[in-house]
Length: 127
Image (cartoon, rainbow, N blue to C red; front, side, top):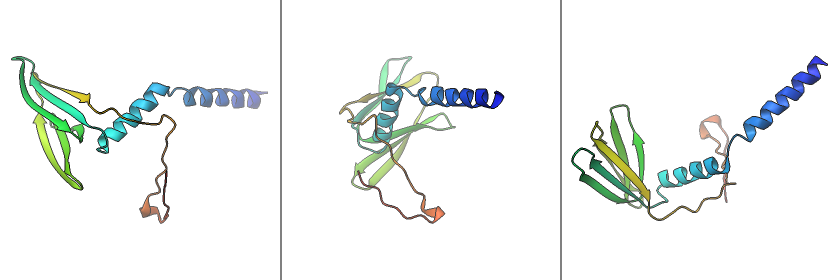
């Protein structure tokens, strides 16, 4: 009887974990992934919140990431297969806003399986 109870409890836990991912969180993840793969036009505005001065505006396809040095790393796609990396130092008075200008067309049901070549598997993926 204890084994049956344990199995039922485990199945319930698995079901609850699997349904914990909401539709909105899956769509949010897919939009972020598309944007960071340079498929979404966005607008970055950096401003000094103390003086209300706009320090930088950038519109285009770019990826963002905060690093451990309190900087915003901006990787900009300047042409096909050409990129540049810029940094914006963030402090107590610097803030930024990113707007999705073009919108992203993502599928909440999309998934991708990647086989890493270092494990010796060769596979192709088509959508």
